[in-house]
Length: 387
Image 1 (cartoon, rainbow, N blue to C red):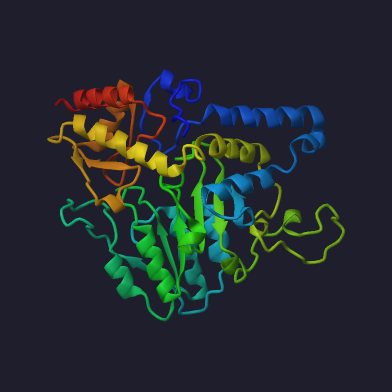
Image 2: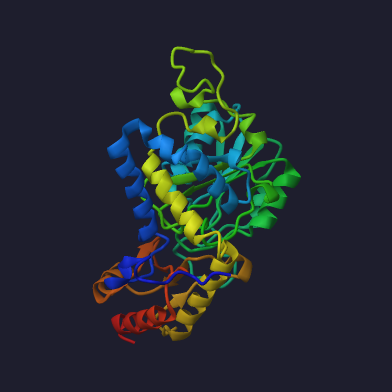
């Protein structure tokens, strides 16, 4: 197995800070920038002839992203962000008045508003209450949701369960195999927002029977802002209506005066018009260079090792860690600390980049962090805390 990339050439941000905010906007991988620049340079010098040298950038993107999700290339679409993918699915889903969509009360907006809009069609958005998956977490901030409540809420009008794999505030990760099994047994489409997991937790989308997975490219995948990945199962696509259309959605290619309606039925049905190809090339470089070997399973183990190293060095009297069961751990470490906004500001000024959401301090190391960075971060964070 290849060693994890931890060098400054790959991640120049190391020159200025210890970066532990990969759950927010991760630093761009330098190889992605080079790939983007090379494509744009060819475009500048060759115009349309760029494709004679590069081929179809989206086809290459589909293949690599498919490998990351253990899915065929034809089930992959290039998106601008998570919300675009989820919106295309929500708007195209055949919902009838009285049909229900189950989600969580503290979901990220990208996985809330697309479903909330379906209430205009008479669908009902059912929100799981906030609950404590451990029985020992403090109240007052988002924590997680209960599989038992979800089970009790599913009925014969439930069509969709739409949940984040990892909650962006607390870091609570769904036990995806158990969740997927429940939805399969009940005949419900499970649609996953993987913005906070793709690149840090393995996802076998077809193996789990997921209907769809949407994720952004600039968090754990370390790609450009304005990129995303969408997986859809063939069965789900067969039941979706097209809601956005353009020249690229139909099979006749550049025969633009042929207005025969023959849209693609694979993942290209969502790539309705000209995409930001240079960005697609850049995100593909991230996935190909960083996440196939070592694979995401190895990356997950490395991230948890780095987390444990940090926890051993942080003062528990100040940093109140939300400790979940092993199957509910994610790349996000969330802490209750006094005056969290002020603490984050002071930490960033001291050279450790962390973030805050939902009232928590969020710390998110990634495979690219070194042990020395983790040790240095702990020392600085303890100093900022005054402990």
